[in-house]
Length: 369
Image (cartoon, rainbow, N blue to C red; front, top):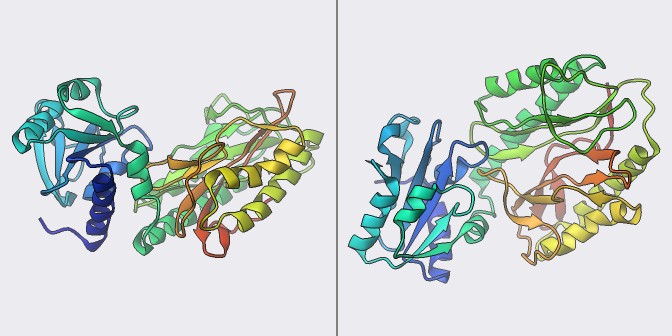
């Protein structure tokens, strides 16, 4: 079956990683659970709307998409650019193909978080190799076609934030304010690929816990919206800023965290370049928070693509070197010693030869509404 040039490029990258680890085949798992649909799309062009699916990539031979038979209409199957089969038990179908082809060493992407237990059990007898990290590294550097999709997602996300701020006012519910942004996201083609939350507390500071935007959540004078979406091209991005109502008096810790955020952005612009390790980038951007006595309650950043959270992680001990055209989501989750005051803002960055570029182009500040 003829592949688009972009899909052919992706298959080539993945097969190179497979050859390096001496795999006979790779099984890539995907599920409709938000943020985990993209691996199947990455290799086939198909977006899972319901249930789950696998893509089997032999080292020698053509890939095949395997769907559960009871889910024959889980998306627009005409968009699949590889062979597709529908099996009563996908794991047994994959195992049978492995036996027929004489495969012994089979990598699995999604082994820990995505593949179903019944399908994993069917692979007994094969040398199953966890392949999450290797698969993510194979797709970490984005093509020009992918970057076009990323930029479109950033455009949609940024305007969604602007709509959120426009509709925000103290006393309004989190649901009604988020609804304005969600309506825009859906209208621009995101469909269900959004994961949007809020962090609330008082008029002067926000607490660290992420919350669903519910109707019974009345917004105070200071809020941290957390906006994460994927546009029509299915590339996830994250863009948000803290929002303060006019006249709100922010806590001293919140203002000091903002100082550290300004330093983080400046450090990332310099340090986020090819050859820098993720460990080194993490320390460069975390320095301002740590020196002020704050700890980071959430991962500093991570690669982001058709799956919301991809490896490498920007964190302690990760020695993967950055490469040009990697896309990173950065969001230091600064928390005060009292466990109360928090600051959390998101940006989607592009690694370039000259340093990091935040794609949304927003100032690093608390937005006043």
